[in-house]
Structure formats: structure tokens, C-alpha cells
Length: 183
Image 1 (cartoon, rainbow, N blue to C red):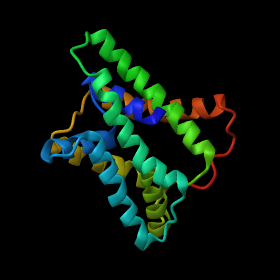
Image 2 (image 1 turned 180 degrees about the horizontal axis):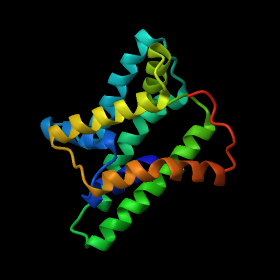
Image 3 (image 1 turned 120 degrees about the vertical axis):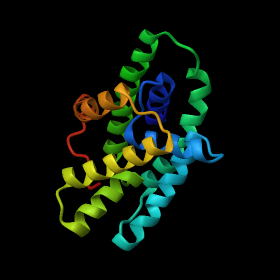
């Protein structure tokens, strides 16, 4: 839920979404789906891509696939509006922090990788390419496709890309998570 609120903050800022939310928003602009519904639909398409890679979902996988999208749609009406730039910047900073905290809880629980993480680890295992290369390729592909579909790319997207790794690491340390298990 925390992760979903963080994503909603980024969307509401209108300063740029995380790469996968750029993609989901792009889908929502081209279809009757909301951003949250597009997030859920994308998650299940990614889970289908797990099948040939023999990835195994867990309870956390399914929760991740469903809950984040539902929370995005529930939180957006509360956050949306014509906010001053300072508030919108605070939404970006707060959104990144909330996604990091949500990630720490999700990773620390070790109940199965989310659809995007499992896709990454499956491609890593199947191709033998380094995780960093595989994840970067996936994120860039989602970002470019989403931007072409009309999703919001901007300074918030760049801030997310630069800050989410260190923010998740800090949240994991703060939560006392020393091992995130097998994604």
C-alpha cells in the first residue's frame, strides 16, 4: 500500500513518474483503463512472461500485482489538483521516499518477487546478462514505450531513477533488513 501511495504522489506531481508508471499512464491514455488498472494489467502480462522462464510466484507476487494498482487509483483523487510547484516537488520527494519504504517492507517480507523483479531475475538467469544490464534495459524500455504512449516523463522521472536505489538501501538498513532473499 505504501508503494502505491508513493507512485500516486509522483503521478499527482505531474513532474514525471517512475518508468513503469510512465508506461501505465501511457496505456491509460490510449485505453479506457485507469493508471492503476493499467498497472495491474501490466503486472499480469509480466507474470505470463514468467511461464517460459519457469519463475515461481509467491503470495507477495500476487499482492504486489494487485494492491499497488488499486492503491494508486484510490490515492490519486485525494492528491490530484492544481498544487503550487513547491507542493508538487514535495510530492516527488515524498513519493520516492514512500516507494523506498514500501520496497523495504516488500523485500524484507520475502514472500515472492513482484512481477517486474521476477521478470528481471528470470531474464538474468535465462540470458546470463548482469542484473544491472537486464534491469536497466527493462526500465528504459518501459519508460520509452510509456513516453511514446503519452505517459508523463520529466524531472521527477530523472529524480526517481537517480534516487530510488540509494533510498531503498537506506530504508532497508533503517528497517534492519540485512537480507532480501531471492528475488
